[in-house]
Image (cartoon, rainbow, N blue to C red; front, side, top):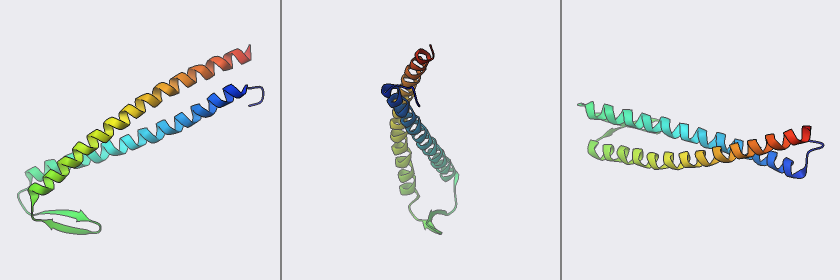
Length: 115
């Protein structure tokens, strides 16, 4: 980074940090979306189930006596995940905008340095 102004070095550092944050937020969001889909599939199967229902608790399978309560818990989990996914989406959007602004600024400054 010789010949690069301290301001540009700072922008490059910020750019790298934003890039890492964006990757982390995108990964968290994808994991949440996957978990949400799993719970939604579980709810679908639960609504079709006519026999005994079991849930995993650690390495044990425990018989569920109150299926309605289990459904309510799963539905609440889906709602909470929707809120968290929405929050992560807003974070992701803000980081993408910041990423683009920094990228344009760095490219512009690099173009000026090459002249």
